[in-house]
Length: 592
Image 1 (cartoon, helix red, strand yellow):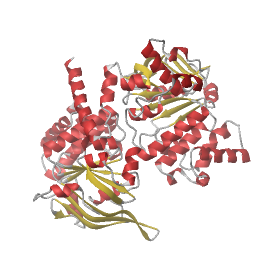
Image 2: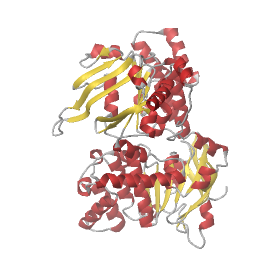
Image 3: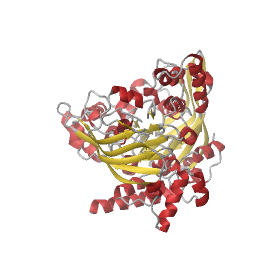
């Protein structure tokens, strides 16, 4: 395999990391199964190399091999040089000095990587004292400096906080502070922004860029988010089935990909604007009477001064929030918290409404209330014609026959001890709609509808991939042919190619079954693919509601504008321009 273009620019300088013919295998049933094969790449000081590819391509396995963090049933062959020193097969105590000191890792999920029973500050102190042997007072001072360096708003408060007391973005910043505490020459960032909001993601990427420039560290970025790659990477190595199939500069890979897999990967990436400017004949649209047609007519009506199509939409209202307030009651010393503040929102039959906003904005609270999982404090909530504002348990049980939900994490929403066929059929069984052979046949039909082999009905969730588990979740949600489907971040943790297939599946099912859908997400590019209308939430309030084109192409609210400016584009040149525009927006906002 050829080396990355970074090789050509090394001159006489020593690479921070040089990997030569690296092979990683795992012992399974007395056989060696390859996870990574014949990998070659190098990273110079101050450079960012992105390893991209789908889950199972070998990205993380090959990267954890650098630190000898693989399980005991693995073997590593080949050469790994750090600053010119061979580190393959070195003694354990030597590797412990390298971990954290010369190579640091930012893991995908800080909540599981940070120790929950120690404060953030004590964990940074421990790192500093292990590697430098400094006094506790000096380590504390340095830890608070580091937390300030990663731009936490109150470093001292963060120092004294436990991980669960910080938001997702703050936890990620705290982990970065711990990672850079010893000024590592190599930083491995393993999906550092996957579960973060676009605004927080943009801030983390700015932070990584700043740290790279300040410390001249090399960064190995592991991700499947091509927008993130376009934003920060200098070079790209594309992996498939354990092999690097293509390498090049970021500009080369994005503008002229050579390998079919790279082209397919880029084609699967949803991005803002991909549906802008679509043409449709208005008369044909009226005849079609589809949600897509109504949106195009709305654009035409606004241009001609006519009243918006939403005002004459005669389809039944399936979900109606009327001045709804949702509060979490006081719990011990934790005061009551208003999560949703006087929200008015309607979703019609056959319509997809995208609900977007940052973490903590109230999106998921609104979605859970829509299917009776959370009570409302004030206002009126009507679902499928039934007022559930003060519903009892039996009324909620009846509602669940007409409304389904697809959760963000299918692994935690499926029973691990139940075969997926039983999970899919369970709603039908509990609703007493089917049993016996009829239920068996319906489960197979549902597996067909989500494009899973019928043989999978006997498998357990842990035997399926993330995308397959999500398909099971969708099949379970539509088993009762719901009038309303709540989709709560159903694609946020999926690879782009898997995400594209799941989105196509949802679109096809929605067109076929014509259910109303409230699609909750922080990914505006996904909403651009799916939604007819978009509602933007901020701090529990709806700040802007409109058609997809109104919100994504011509937003009126400053918050929506900032949200859009933070979305990375899978194009290095356009992303550089967008980054500058975002900085100007932030400067303008701070000066007001």
